[in-house]
Amino acid sequence: MRFLILGAGAVGAWIGANLIMARQAVTFVGRMPFAQAACANGIHVTLPGGETWRLRDVDVATGLVEALQRPPLAYDAVLLCMKAYALDQAIDELRGCEEKLSGALFVAFQNGVGNEEKLAVAFGERRTLAATLTSPISVEGPAAVRLERLGGGVGLAALSPDRAWQPIAHALSRAPLLSLKTYADWRAMKWSKLLLNLMGNATSALLGVSVAEIYNDRRLFALEMRMLREALAVMEAHAPPIAAVNLPGQPARLLALALKLLPDSALQALLSRRVAKGRGGKYPSLYYDVANRSGRSEVDVLNGAVAEAGRRLGVPTPVNAALTEMVQQAVQPDATLSPQAARRALEQLVQT
Image (cartoon, rainbow, N blue to C red; front, side, top):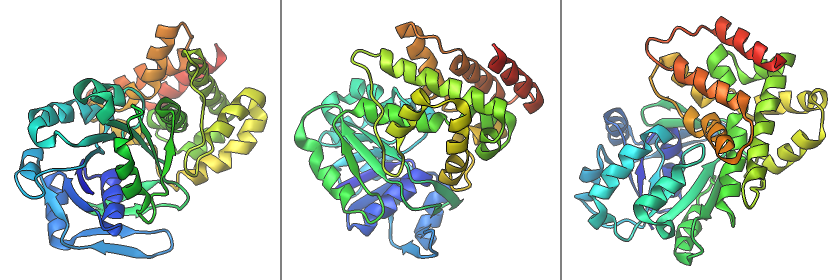
């Protein structure tokens, strides 16, 4: 199989390295620092036990047009591994090269919900696949990544019942550490991943603290549980309802069940240690967006997606709406929202 990977950050480098280890043909499209490092030294992957992969002679381009001007001239799949806020630009570029990608399927690895629908509008449901990654990957250099812990993997689901996607699933299943699992319901897979992505993400970004600290704070933990229960209520309000499913290494279905049946005191004892351990020491994605004042973040497809679906379905989502608005403010270069002010606002929200 011939794979084109757009976005050579942590996710793209990890997925691509695994495909290379499975003897698949892979071309990376990444920024200049990645391209220079990969061409000079290859891609370096560090595993939790100390083992390393050093992948030499990788095929790298710094732009889509460049990648499509050299062999292989046709790709079986385009793996979109950029952040969700960069997907619109990627789709525009891909549509400009549609003739050379006429036989390719498009696989969306973005966090959050709403990304697959954009790809389906642009290229059709039959050519769109939804994907999730539950392995914690950190970046150690321009072409160097680390797997923080074993046990995660890739989820894959088709938007269409067409069977054309099965060779891609087979190729991914041969990769040594992707632990592929396929799903019949792509919405269930993506919303289940959304539940996991919501945990501690916006709160950590606003307060500048780790998820472990949040889950050990009684009031902040209560806020987190309200946020997650809002998301579950939105899932159940869909027609038909969206059920949570377990993902590779992540029992999202059990999480949903616990949120329905257990009080916060029992949940805190159950989740505080597990969530901190599951992140492998990583801060969540929104934390870096706020810390860097980048002007953009994925909050719109995370908490914002819950709030928007709640408005559409008539489900109250005040916590997700408030977190979305606060993160949108905090990522701006001229943001004035301090962690102290954010904490006061969040603690007031818990009391309402």
